Image 1: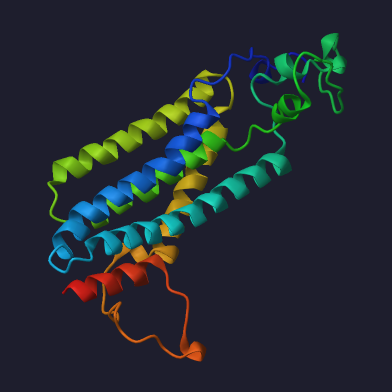
Image 2: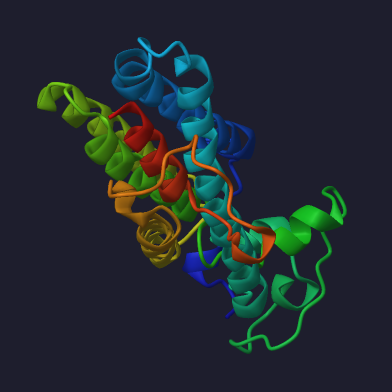
Length: 248
């Protein structure tokens, strides 16, 4: 619509840049998993055996592999929804400057041509990809996965420490999400949808890829390998459980 206030805001940039978001989403879980697996399992469970350096690192990479798998799914679905929905961002008119809307008095505009030659075509196309919020979906996925990981894997650590770490993750997620609205980069429902998408896929990854980080009875890591026809792929949960069985 001509002069629609929901898409008439000025473009002011990003408080949380995409680079900062991706850096935290990719590196923070790896550092967290390495620290937790070494301090809670490697140093205590395997130091006497002399192989803790190998086992704790293998465990960390196993969990991180599953995390990245879920992260790629979140990123892919977010991009797909952005293209399929094609919702204008709050700064759409300022970024696109559609010719049909410059002197529009007829109300709804069904087709338009952007006239802003001061920015790249990538930014112009991005102005029509508001739903859902990628910042919200990625940060919500990071929060869901990491908070559950800390709760399940930080054995023997004071509960207050875990709570403060989870609170820090929550604050980061809220900062990434709320600033998308205050920066006029997304509507509030875009952020809400992104949070729901990231949280749901985080739960899915934890349950189906990581086995809820639970332990159980598995063969030792030193057990003979089965014949080729009996071999199967192991999840991160399988690898860690077998490692813990070796130390017991």
